[in-house]
Length: 418
Length: 145
Ligand SMILES: Cc1ncc(COP(=O)(O)O)c(C=O)c1O
Image 1 (tube, chains in turn yellow, orange):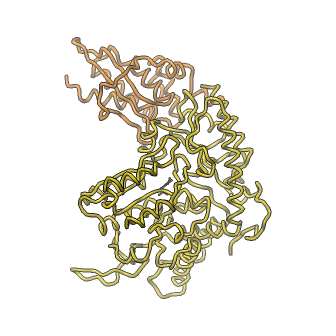
Image 2: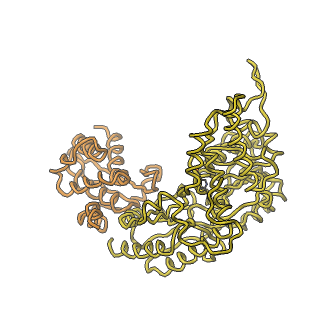
Image 3: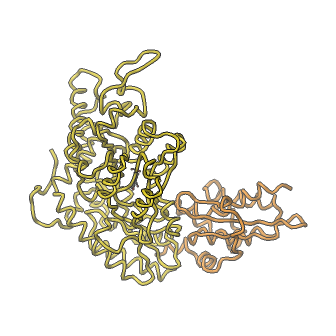
């Protein structure tokens, strides 16, 4: 059972009491945790679901016939069903459990790369990608003697979509086999126009991989409506535990793709000279999965549903609006990313004139405000925009207006201190 | 904010705002950049050994936080006038202290540099404080005597 305090159709606005559902936060009343783009905190219902799994249901899955193994297997497969429904995927066979977005993207890059890439082909990414959605493609391109091309970035950290036209005009569009792009930039919070991008991919027969690591925590996604062929996300950024992520892929592709990792569980028959592969999704799930984490991931999605997806989003939008208005009014603060709030979500990347982001973050830490500083695993993006690093505050639903105000006050304090 | 003042001592803030021996090193190719991969800070270092076998000048250039900039600045002052061998020994002691393998008392006779011993209480900042020193160690390794 999911211990949602609220019912799905409740219209009442979500208040600050939501914070109390997160034990770490409830036990640290002074902590303003604003590093949610790195990882979110986990609600009680997720922790107890995982705890219960190990206390009552633990056994290896898909292998043995005794009762406990059946219960454990059911816990795994029920979680898959929860994810399938949440993403509106056509079938559970399209839901592959990974350890994280990074693993899902590596799986795609290796397996899809092997299936689709030939010398002279192009893989298109954007210059705003997280290294996880950049380096695996760079390496896949190298292996296939193909080329990696990056959609450039505008001054306001949006993608220069006109570049797609350039690719059409100069003929390169015809050589693109795979396009991999984030839904939301982890460094700047930019929401990319993924429908337009997927329509363009259709037109040119390009397979599209969508990195939803930063979007799934903020709003539900119907994978079939995205127009993408693959999607990845990480449970740990979505109120779930570390150690479980999801790769969704169109069955037509998954069927054709070679396995990435091999070993137990993913085989059908093994002979000395040759093996055959298990059916989907198991073909891509070699070895014993992290069932407890998968159970926690499903519990997190259930927690969001039980709390009310639109209520979560409404609360976050309000916090985001408040943060944006407050931050742009701070003297000497440069806020990066789109000016239009409809084009950004969750992430506020900034610099204080003359002060390094590390020093800002260190100062905020003393005020019990947790933010990230650095390049946010997006060096190509930083280089594109000519910056070394930024300070980044990122929101989740349990943050409060007061915490945002504390952030802004402390930023002003840092400006005076250094 | 007392604990913070232990990190950002006046000497550190002074070297951050007015770094010594910071120079434009754009003539050095980017492949000689020393980088802190976890935060993106980068630094170039130029170390010149004179005819007398001593380090005549140490210059640095780059982007860094208060800790890494001050550390580079303080280091440059310290290394000038030393032989490469002496410099290597100093660097090794400093890195050991910052890694927590040697007591920070070892820095006691180092004058202003002693303040960097405080960084050991901020483990996530150790990489900032050691960037320039690792760079110097590399430069010295390539300078044969
Ligand atoms: C946009 C994006 N993609 C991929 C990742 C990698 O996620 P993970 O570290 O969970 O594999 C992240 C994490 O920061 C991210 O923000």
